[in-house]
Amino acid sequence: MGRKSKKKNNNIYSIITFILSVIIVVCAGLYLAVDYVPKENYEEKLMRPGMKEVYYVSQWCSSDFGKQEFVLWDNTRVDCLTKDYAIEFDFAKKWAESIGQSLYYAKMTGKKPAVALILTKIEDYKYVKRIERLDNGIKIFIIRAF
Image 1 (tube, one colour):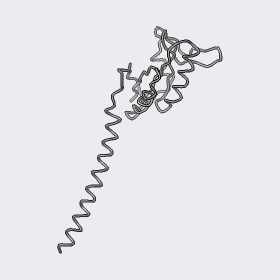
Image 2: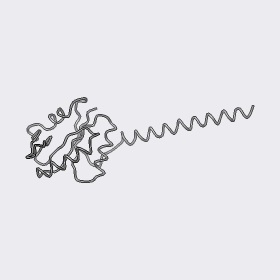
Image 3: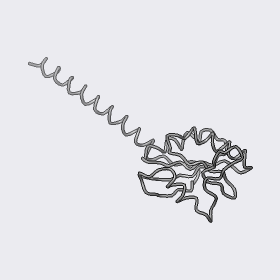
């Protein structure tokens, strides 16, 4: 009778250990996503979720702030050209593409490069972190659409 209870206890301990391990991994992932604090205070705007990119460009880049869809000599288009920045708007998962475009537009216009990342869920802050790691002088604007 003593053997069965030890075996039963070992199974219970194994199950509890497994559940606690899962909880720790999930909590660590949420901590990294939810409690993420950017290196700088970014200009962040809360906007309506579920819209297309053009909506966010039009809401952010009003006529008194900058020029929308500014066409360059090679027919490429800067999403928003301001006094200081050439800003590329994109959804967060396309962070790498937005960097390349902003660097190109900055070079072509003589402005500083900037991206406006559209975050559609809390986990999208990981893409902001990726741009920060590059430490290449690109200004980051955040649009929270969730």
